[in-house]
Image (cartoon, rainbow, N blue to C red; front, top):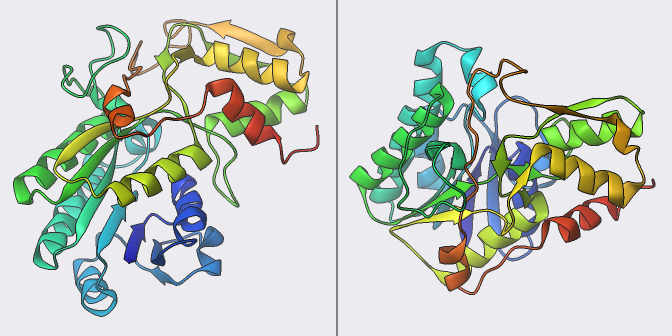
Amino acid sequence: MKIFITGGSGLLGQYLNIELSKKYEILTQYQFNIGNCASYNNVQLSITDFQKLEKIFSSFNPEIVIHTAAVSNPEKADKLSADIVYDINVNATTNLAGLCSQHNSKLIYLSTDLVYAGYRSSYLKEDAKLIPISLYAETKLMGEVKIKETFDNYLILREALLIGFGLNHSRNNFHLMYENLANKKPVNLFVDQFRTPLELHDSARIIGSLIEKNIHGEIINLGGTERFSRYELGEILCEETGFDKNLLVKRTMEEAELAYKVADVSMSTEKLQSYGIKSQTCRDSIKKILSGVNI
């Protein structure tokens, strides 16, 4: 099976390269930083370059496209013009869906838990109320809509907060938290923002399992089974490493003057589990993350 991965040098993309190349023939796309794409069949292009994408479909003929490329968080989106964010997160997604439809390819789209209303209740199911409050989340939801309007050979995965270590140039909040604690620097962590975190290896593994299940026309929450605040994640990390918990500084979203106060987008993964797929516990995930680190 041939799989085309967009955003292959990103946080999740590099883990997908590692995981999916074990079983499948992959072509992985990057634009600026090559990351571990250098170790695989790769292509450098902008995800908004429709003509180059057309050539990829004609020459590589992928059976599955995994679309992770995006302006990937609210902070990054707010630093760009709305037109640029829309072009990358919506127009490029629409074009990919059209190409997948023309070439009989399945599209697996990585969306976000931030499309949900973040003030309702915990363990949100896929049919919960959707109120994206940032430009990033709004454009990711618009991507979902455009895909569903185009065809039905898709799988939309609303991904939770990813924890783990970024490879090469990539970083996430968990990685930065670890580095600061390791260097005995204080870390400000929210006590009033809740997610269902998922470890990076585990995310790539689950996506691989979903490919084998051959599911289409579905929206699935892709996350862990446990609800944690950022502060609680810090506590678990300190317990597993021996880092000083006194370095963890409790903060509320109000105190931090957070632009987008999303209190709780923790997701139910009952639907994912109904396919026989389950994520690791958060503590086991953190142990796995740390297993290759000399503490």
